[in-house]
Image (cartoon, rainbow, N blue to C red; front, side, top):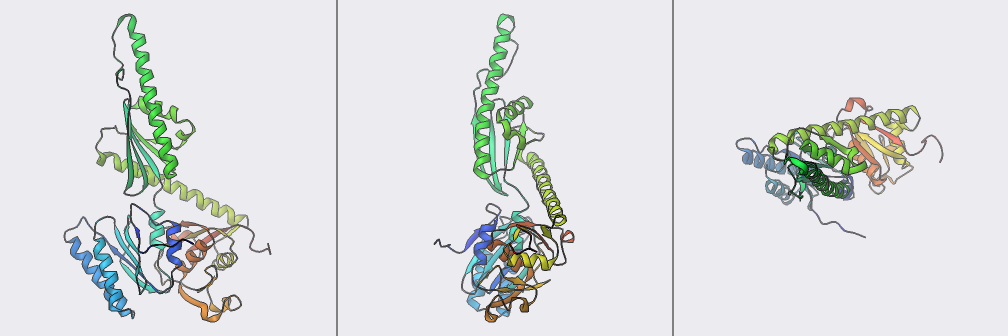
Length: 381
């Protein structure tokens, strides 16, 4: 059995993936979930952040928590400060802080105290990017950036041969041989860069390669990458272009890839619903969760409190809209209530379902959820 050291730190450099969130859901409630703006680019950011932290501490005291618990939360928020991301987050139990950190995306300030933690924004922020590799190449080599998450990148510089790097015009009988040597040098350098890029793709599970630089160098790189080149998208820029110029272009490409991925997954949801292996009906989704039948849960990161669900404290898969639906499945004293979104996420993660956060809640069902199923929930298998 493995144990987890708390608090877990989550940040743009380490987004909150499903495994991290699932671990937090295993902790007994109640939980305080605090999200406050981290506006580091505005005058008085530190003072405003500290004020939000103090207000959060007072809020959980109003919910009956001790002054020590409030101080734990306030200290964690103050320790984070307004720098490092767009939103500061702290998840805590009355005894200890469970999670601290920054999210790359802005979320409205909110403090909730419920039996289950409010972790939808953590998952939502993590879903807004994909692991990718950025390559800035010229004919002598490249700078390779492995970006596993916003703000988290490892950099490798490939230094190739330069003896024949400039294909000049020496003239006479040697011109053709000199040009061929230059071409061979470029190809050799591109091969070394390709090896590094493939290693980076494998290490972080990159789903995209964004490349900028010398046109010939990128051409040689694309050829040297083989099938991995299917991930490559070229943008304008050079190895020596200022980062502030390249970064927005890379961001646009990544955002397009994320949007395309989400569109494909929503199309898969529609096909599954049409084929009887999916539903946007809340009752169908909950029935599938109780049976361990959910392959992918599609859910919107709406604030807690909009919808309530009942759940078993001892069996996370058991979740329903009415407590009476759990009477034959769980002892009455083990049934709790709280945010529908949190209860559904807890159940899905307990059965290792995929999670697809969908910012546009309008495309989902009445409780901002839908699901694809592992099997037909209308059968006994």
